[in-house]
Image (cartoon, rainbow, N blue to C red; front, side, top):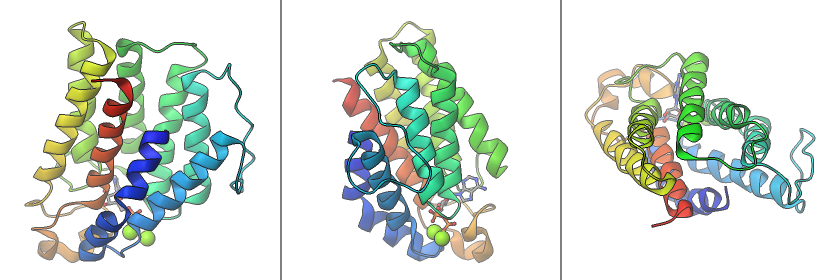
Length: 211
Ligand code: ADP
Ligand code: MG
Ligand code: MG
């Protein structure tokens, strides 16, 4: 989560620029604000988001940390991305539960639940030019690697590559979901902001999990 928070602060201007072209220009601010709340919620310091967030301790399982992070995102990020990313982190956390350690296969199952949650909430399918266009290939790549017995970091790097490829493929698509859909054909030729933040999230997972 710390790696992801750093990435969201680093990419804030890029996400703002992308969302200014085909949305309302707030995606950078939304993600930065959301992950500032995640950092505060997980660090027991700084401004506490509106929803009560229990203080973590050393015994916190990965699933519990992810669930808490998801709650922070849902409570402080307005707009489409808050409930969608928040719901995804919550679903991942719930799937991982309180197991003290997470291997690639268990994480793959959690990512599958997270993707299903985004699609249940937002009803987007691949090709609609949304975060799904990065998230779905990332989950597919992570699963394939995990099923073939790869280590966690290997699966995470495969997921990051797939997310970045999916992100780039949103450029020629016409948006069919979210604010960008109102632009119709004028959404073509721009990279989707949510697919871009999704790729950064999977890249930060890979970086955090090792070479
Ligand atoms: P808003 O559009 O409400 O201002 P953000 O700018 O934070 O919210 O997020 C925009 C991103 O959310 C889009 O680039 C897209 O990737 C994603 N998005 C929007 N609607 C959906 C949806 N129905 N399903 C999946 N992702 C969506
Ligand atoms: Mg926006
Ligand atoms: Mg908005």
